[in-house]
Image (cartoon, rainbow, N blue to C red; front, side, top):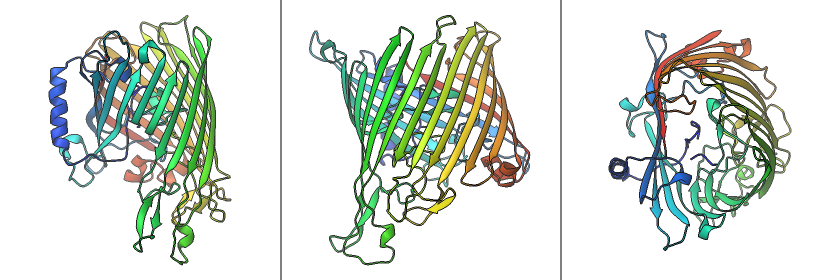
Length: 493
């Protein structure tokens, strides 16, 4: 099942792109549709027979520390790891996802729908209630999904889709990490029984990116201009059902980037603007098992993935293989020596009516295409680390005092080594008493109304190098802390 960028179990975040100036009208329409269709939902698989259905994910709240007479709280996690290490300190975020249903001809069981997703987030630590799109560090708008899909075509186990889609499997929710097969992007695909095939086409003119550039300077007309350089990705997945409660998922990908050429210009800087085509490969396997001797919803997932060349994975909590890591070989102008190895273990145990235990471990080792293990230049002269090693292990325990009052307690250990630097590490404990107004004894029940307290201890290198958003704000500290009052929801049928 694919949950519909960086957020909870059934939700997503996306950190790029923008909507058109007609957004106020769009959101007004969405609000009216929401009021007309109270059975809102977020899962496109569960789209009802109504012509319009809606889903939503969001979180909002306030947080603070006692610095400078009172300040907004900062995330305690290590730099460049996002929510890996615990997501209790995440900032405000909103998604609204309308789905439009189309009826096939009579006696045809095909399910047809178009789904669009709008997301809103702050580009700083400012809260939603005091920000606008024209504020400094204010609100940003994105549209990570707009696709059409036909499922169960003429009663067969066959689906087809085209468009921009958050196409991925479940995440490690307590670390907000979509792993193994996050194929989010724009393209098309087909699914038949246990096989999924897709093609993505990635292109951007983001000139601040340190990845292989998705643009180049074209002066064929006599005037230099930015031209797109596209990455094409072919993806194949297949599920092997081993038993009634376990399966094995195999993954393969091929990546190719078109060449970018600077013609007619003889410049000493041309080496940074001229680059040939490049390729990459991905293979992976994921084992999934449901525990039948425990309460329903208990499972264990274990995955291994290897990416090479320009398909060596992401960073900062993202695992998309088209987010190339590191620096290129600046002599041969490619990422042929690059690789990334990723291991993820994710387990959830519904022990009894009072206890749920959720644990994970994430190990990522990545290297770019440059010769060095430390810092190297990218195509545009920016310097980045060419090797990293991340390791995080964490667990959440949820205790159900009553149907309405639960207690979340978390323990995380994270470490990261950039290049030849010493290891930066952190241990963090979080406690969150929560009120669940729906009265469900379920770790996925929402909305949550939480009071959050987090305390972290940093090692010497993390402390001295200010290796977290909190330390970057307050300076060298052995201990970090966070207080927050937060709400989180998601809704679907």
